Length: 114
Length: 113
Image (cartoon, rainbow over all chains, first blue to last red; front, side, top):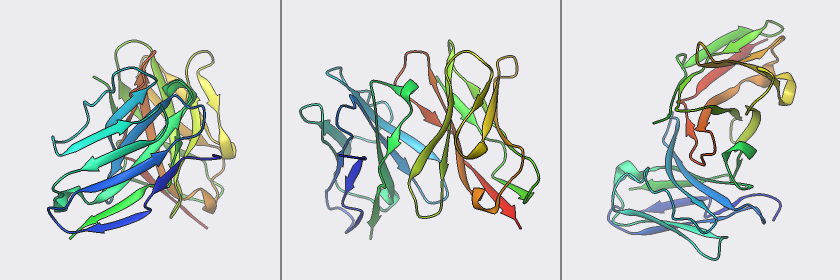
């Protein structure tokens, strides 16, 4: 596609429920990244995928968070047993091979845990 | 480990005046440095980058940034601010050959007419 697509754009969930956030990167971009932006805060790195290499999961805040990337394209970020502090905008970005090419960001998924 | 500091939460400038948004970084090896901008109700957009070469890099919308290795800084500048420049600006750094990019906390720029 022309840009990075994220779905849903908004998600309201009850505390304790699981949620899945989807990211469809730009075709041909081998690197995919997930970041979290809390209200009034900067971007918190969560995870990145590069080609067939093992993902860098060093930013995932707890074992309730996981992500996968299937077929080197679409990625899903899963949050289990959601907590109110998980409320944030989750941003996905992709790039051609790596950071030096700059990132193209999606519009994000705004997650609200009530 | 990489880190980025944006010491100012907010910068206020009058339209037509020059603006500077500050950024300092810490990274092992040679850094890749970036500026991104987030306009209200819009996604993050790439503004400019420094990889190697000339220390002064030019980007979109008349912005430029100067890489200063000795001061480990990468300040964003524009000679004449516009009201439409009002937005949230993020500085970011990744290490050479790395894929992990760390973003600063952001600086909100207000340009007053």
